[in-house]
Image (cartoon, rainbow, N blue to C red; front, side, top):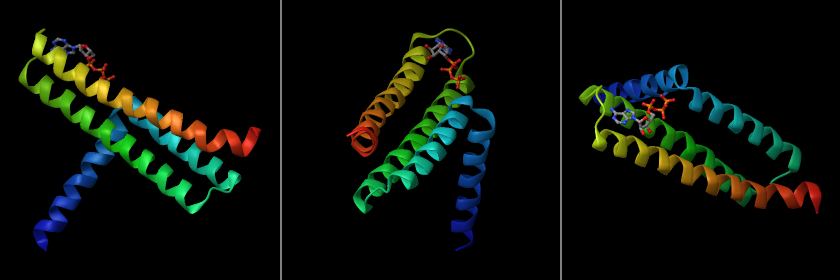
Length: 116
Ligand SMILES: Nc1ncnc2c1ncn2[C@@H]1O[C@H](COP(=O)(O)OP(=O)(O)OP(=O)(O)O)[C@@H](O)[C@H]1O
């Protein structure tokens, strides 16, 4: 049990470090708060809330993983290296794909509530 709480403690430290140091994570947090406020104003269904929670959680988790890749690459080299570039660009690409999919799903959920 002690090990479990220690892992939880370090995971929380990682999350806090991510939000404190990464501009993108601050942006995602602001977008998440805005989405939740809009969700309450729009009267989302239970299923819509489940989707929104999954998207917000997935987006933040993916951005934390992207930051971890950046840190790991920077630890290995601070010189230009094609593999370092590919690793960072691939991780950033994963974030971008999830962000685009999230934005599209968000529009599909919210547009009918406000404009149709
Ligand atoms: N060691 C490296 N070798 C080659 N290319 C690199 C290297 N480090 C970074 N790059 C390139 O520069 C881009 C930006 O890298 P950087 O580490 O500044 O991350 P970032 O996308 O600006 O993220 P953040 O704003 O969170 O720091 C990478 O996507 C990659 O294409």
